[in-house]
Length: 178
Image (cartoon, rainbow, N blue to C red; front, side):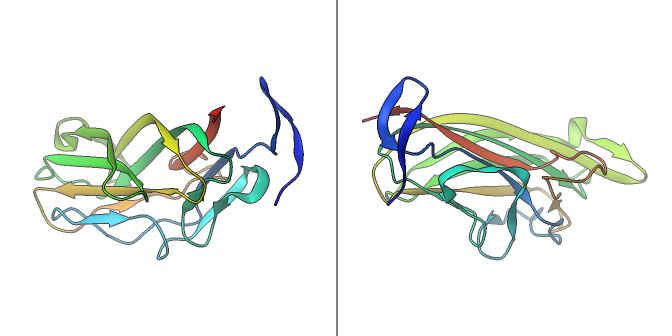
């Protein structure tokens, strides 16, 4: 179900399943103690003044669901806040629904290079990956920070200006239909 149209070099496919989204608000302290947290149902996503062509990104659960089988490129940037000197590992994954696929997008030691703005310590994880998807597959974002107390949250993204409208974002696009 969708409109047939042209996009890129592809023709006769369901309309362009491209999206960009950000969290609607900052999370609470969700990690820091090594907990791995899926940024899905508990955390509201929004198109945030960006785009969700063909409505394939579900803002209620943070999932992008494939309706045009093929290869997709996903880009993720998470702005973490509440980083402490003891937080020695931060990881971000793209989780693929087809079973056991976890794509490690970034892994860093945030205690070495966090940035302090008005007494809050921030650190950015970012990465991209290309994933082959079948109809009905979905992807979502997972984050974990470890080495100290559960004091780390994820900053909102999308519209706004404080401190950055794109502090946290999750976006994807079709690069080849199969």
